[in-house]
Image (cartoon, rainbow, N blue to C red; front, side):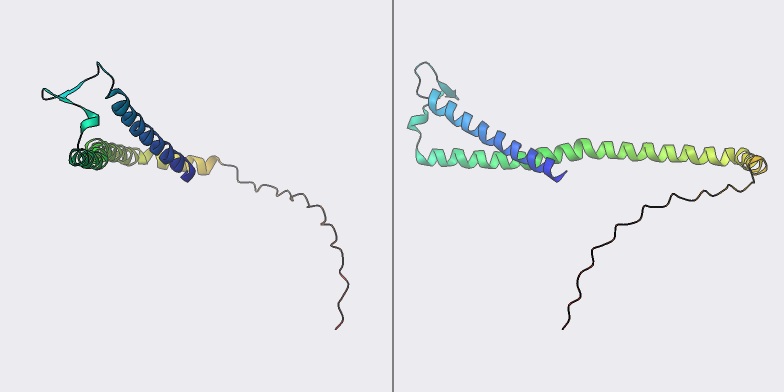
Length: 149
């Protein structure tokens, strides 16, 4: 099972790196092509003319957004889906246990009568014990010459 998780982790990281490389390639290769324009709030963004401070801010914002997504999305899925399903499963299990308990209490006279009938009807003769087949004799180990001091 550990190998499966390691494989899935490596495949996930490869997919993330591939997506990053594809995104970088699209931005840099298509950013300078005539006819392709990225417009944000009515201002055209030219990727080749972006300053170092703007690039640093954009990169820092992306890192923070990725970190938040890696923390928030699993917690939302865990607490928003997993916890209610766990509670429903526990309640269903408690309901089944209660129904089985009521069934045992209500059916106990029938179980007692059935046990008494089984004791009266069962075969009381002891079964003959058949001996297990003997194992073949082990081959003799070659004797080693004794060492004399």
